[in-house]
Amino acid sequence: MEPLAAAGYVMIAATGVTGVLWGAAGGAIAWVVRLRLVWAALLTAGGFLAQEIFLESVRLGAAAFVGLPPLILALLTAWLATRLLEARSRWWRLAIGLTAFIGGLVVGCLCLLTWRFSLWAPSTIGLAADVCLIPFLFLGPKRIPAKSSEE
Image 1 (tube, rainbow, N blue to C red):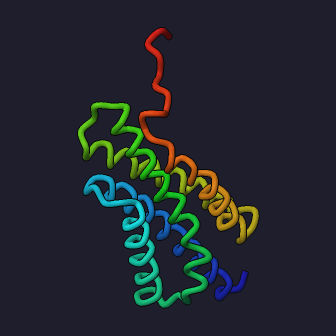
Image 2 (image 1 turned 180 degrees about the vertical axis):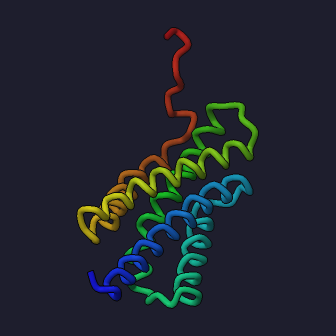
């Protein structure tokens, strides 16, 4: 493989991984400091795009296409995990945030593993998973069934 092509693949992978890190951290931190999801998403996406454009010199379209779908997937996963854990457990607030951060990282990295098949796969799978997670935002944590103690 040409060195220039290898460098391009490394830049694409770095953009995707950075998006997952920004998303997982944004979702967990936003819940810990009680920031609304809309503001958390805007601040996280804005910070990610600013970092990619100004520090990494990546074009806006490339950064948005490669990094934003995994970012939103990790953000929604971390946000929903914190909401569920706070409603169903008696954990310390920071422990809930750390657990949600790890959960967002795991789901985001699983999404990025699809790069083995195609460069389009993480973006399309991330967007499809985001669409599937959006209805859970409207489902209150009290409506999520708890484990029964009969088992």
